[in-house]
Image 1 (spheres, rainbow, N blue to C red):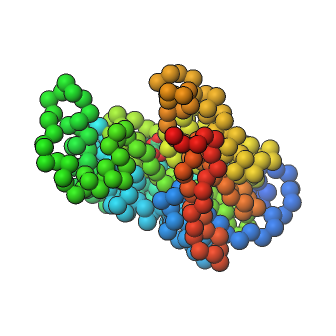
Image 2: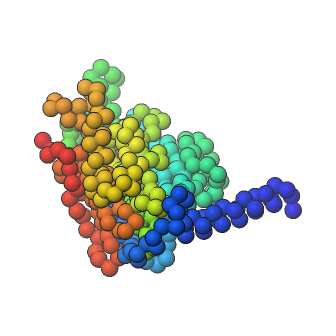
Image 3: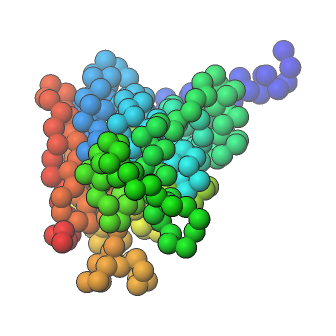
Length: 359
Ligand code: ASP
């Protein structure tokens, strides 16, 4: 046996021992009270109704919250009807689908993430491997793809015909002075009609992602966020979703949180980390989300990020759960909902609290 393999084995043994210790006594927490048994619960963005149900079923069957979260969001990653995540997600400015995803485990305080990953349908599963099978946290672009290949993830074309047509329509109509011309018949295309009915034609830059936060029966927490990012983004642009502390964060001493919507707003206010820290100070999940959104408003200072009334021009949604199993969600603007499922109950959509009435 080489020295290297010995070292590696020792390293792995030490890692599992640390994880076991962390499961019993989180770092910095002191012995702390033994958490009361919690019914497994999952909270997610509104596109995660089936995902929260699967995550809760998985945790009831013994899965760790982070694994349950990844299993839940895989439904949406594989769904071509969801234009904001995984397969069928809308591409970047150049028509290339680039995916971002991250996972975090609140027991071990470990995380894994990938950004600008192309051709892999389930980036959250790759993020989980980054967490479990590297000593690092974030891999991007070509490096993330090489890592996924090394771990046997199949490569495939993620750009559906519907997504391609929507992208082309956007490209042809985005700038009056470039060389692209729309065809007169284009708006009669059923895929474009479907898109315009669902998202409208004025801004044409709607947002979407799935975040899922999970709390297991012992109050352990884990979370995952996965997205195709902002529609028609600059190639290489990375949003909040794969950034630990921004699009997701959890701490086994406190709870778990994440967000969807305008990624840059979440990044500049360290959205998910702020929610978790406010819960640590005693706020409920909903109150912590609202207070974080107030910080986002305070940090929205330049004119082009504001609407005509001085409010933020873009929406941001935050979702949270504490280790006691309480959940909450809030958005900058009215009209958002979040998905929640508690073991033994059906999954349902709940209105988010909000700071501003839309319109
Ligand atoms: N937060 C994602 C991003 O900025 C997009 C979204 O949630 O709509 O990439």
